[in-house]
Amino acid sequence: MTKFTAGVLLSMLSCATAFPAIAEMGAVLQRREEPPPRAPAGRLDRPNTGRPPSGFNAEDQYVDVTDGGPNRFIAPSGADIRGQCPGLNAAANHGFISVRLPSFSSW
Image: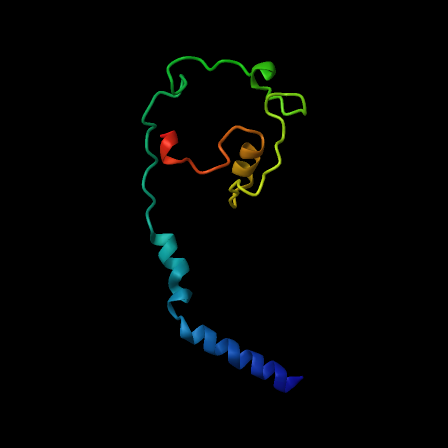
């Protein structure tokens, strides 16, 4: 056990001598001056748009993805392209974005 402890202490000594600037870093951080806080660039008593925000309306935000709805789930076929983003894949499965590459005739 004594040899093991001596070996650990010697290995830690090499780490301490490898970076001597770390020992003085605390004093450097204490001497450093922080810049004064800045005043806000805009007024804080109004929203960004200049108008008060409209309230949240759950009925306006509702998207019908049931089987009989306009955005029902459509399973991808072999011609459909899927990527790595699950959000884009879900949007394509529900018909919000195209699932195929556009052709030149569609432009």
